[in-house]
Image (cartoon, rainbow, N blue to C red):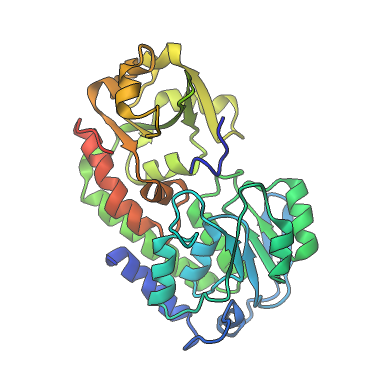
Length: 351
């Protein structure tokens, strides 16, 4: 199974910008970081206790230097008007700066200053030393799968809030709520969620042909096509497909019940013909593109693949908007990924 990290200007952004403006405390300058967070925190917001997978974390006063562990945590912070002092470098689906276009646009639109923000490389694991170097007073890991050991180490650096539902599977709405509480902006977080959900709802309403169709999100290892990898119902990708109106593939639902804690499951390629899904989404990689898979004597028997009801995702940035959904990435998901799904439903393969 591949690593989790490896598989990962329109109306929606305008809505997020309104929330950002409401959270801003005025022109930014200097190193900025999260110094404005305390000034704009809601009255009587502290101390606050936030529940998560490893217990509870109490934040005694408004944090001014927030570091993040999960890739989408920084998105939520900026959507609330807070620039983190440190965040992971986006090495899959990111831009040349190790960020994302939607994050950069939100920072610019809100007039925030991210020049003092550190982007640390987590490709070899959590960079505890780099995180400590940012001298945070709060660490967020909602969009992550940090272990108890990771949490204990991070907590020695600063109060840490871990994921709340399942490793790598906390719904973006819950991420927003927890982060909003931790930084003293619960009401603004609720407004942000409402605006983001409306963006999704409007897009879904405009594409009724998706509603009720079943979908599966798969991955393939080019050097070993004897197995079909499937993201379980707890993973964020199927979660987003459900938000767009799809229902879980019966095959995926059955496999998910066998290990509720896992974010992916395997299906033997010999059982490819049993993969029940009106639409199959997968990452198109060298050696495992649509043409290679359809020609494979076993995998080519996946019904949706045979019939052209698939999305062979070749744009990592666009795929990232579904893999790690956030109030900022939803713009890209709605504008660039949803149309691919609509085409797949119609039997028009999309890349």
